[in-house]
Image (cartoon, rainbow, N blue to C red; front, side, top):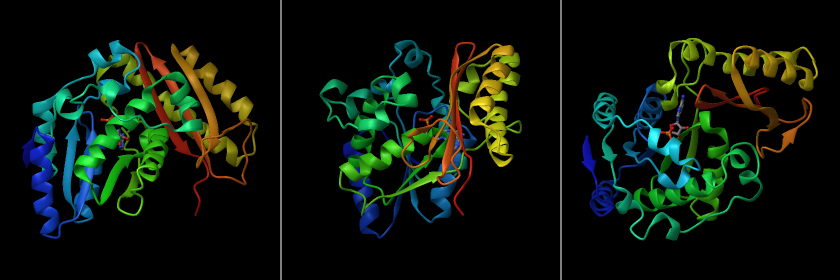
Length: 287
Ligand code: AMP
C-alpha cells in the first residue's frame, strides 16, 4: 500500500493509474478502522478496483468540539488493517492539505430538507461539514465508484445529493454497503471503543429496538405503541434515546405510522453514557 500525505502527489499517482485503464474505488473514512470499514475496502477490491482509502478526521463536521477531541486516532493499527485488506492507496492528509484556506472558506453545499431532520436537526452544521470535505475528496480522487456504509443512512442520501449537485452522477457510481454488526447486532462503530463493559452489553439494545420496529410492522401493530415501548426499554437500562422514528427511505420524510405503500427506514439515535450511537434498518426492503 502506498501512503500519500499530499493531494498533489496522490492526484499525479491516480492520473497514471487511470491512464493504465484502472478503475478507482474510493473509501473515505475518519480512521479508527474496524471490520465495517474493511468491508468497504473489500467491496472495492471484489469489484476489481484500485482501492483508495482516506483517513481524515474532518473538524468541519463536528458540531461538538469535545466529540472531535475525543475521536479515537489509531493510525498505525489502521495502516496494518488496510494492508491486510489489500488496500492499494491510503491518503492521510493534514488539515492544511484539505483546507489550505481554512475550512470556513471551503465551498459550501446545502442539502435543504435533509439537513433539517434527524442527524441534521440534532447536529447543526454536521452535513455542511460532510459536504465540504466530500466535495474536496471527490475532486481529488475522482473515483469511478464511491463506497460508503448504510450505517450512516442519512449521510448516504446527502452524499448522493452532493454528487448530483457537483454534476458527477454520470462519472461516479455510489454504492451503499450493508451495515456490519457485532454478534448481538450492535453496528460496528469507532465510537464503540469508548463504551465500558456494561455499556457495551446494553448498547445491543439499539438493534433490538430496530428489529422490534421491523417485526411489529409485520404483525400490524401501531408504530406509536412500538416507539413508546422502545423508549421505555432503553430508559429502563439507562440509555437515553434522542429519536426512534420511521421515515420514507428515499427522502427521510418522517412517518407517524407504518405505511406499507412506501419503503420505510427505522432510525435510532441514543446516548449510552457519554457516547452517542446511531443505527438504522430498512423495515420493508423493496424486492
Ligand atoms: P467513519 O470513519 O465513521 O466516517 O466511516 C467511514 C465509512 O465507513 C462511512 O461510509 C461509514 O458509513 C462506513 N461505516 C462505518 N461503520 C460501518 C459499519 N458498521 N458497516 C458498514 N460501513 C460502516
